[in-house]
Image (cartoon, rainbow, N blue to C red; front, side):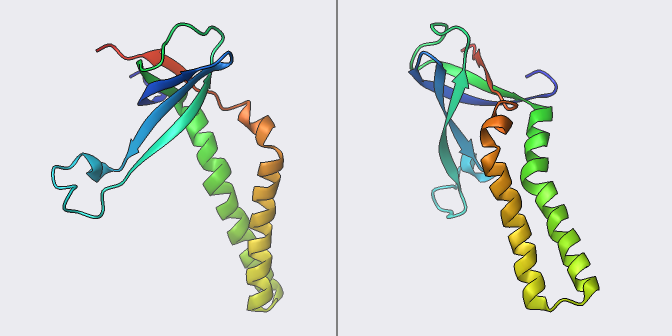
Length: 141
């Protein structure tokens, strides 16, 4: 794997005129443990990812591939979904407490501010989505 690239193994499940649909299996660290059948902590989830491609026909249904994302784009996603809402939450909380607003109003206002942030993200999802793109490469068996 190249430095600065996040990759996950997957299988091509569909080929469309726009690109490929790839199924990847996300596993927790204990999913590969030999005792996972006895433990209720094991966690696996299958996800479908749309990979836009300029040329289709390079991969076929059933091919094992690597779905890749630049690490910087992954960090941008972390900022958008975790860091910025946390900053909004703490800033509103401290500001409203300093003004002497009641705890109930402060709590509801803070939650409202975070909900509004995610609503704006939802409204901008197409524009933001254009910045995040996956690439696909063949896995040599």
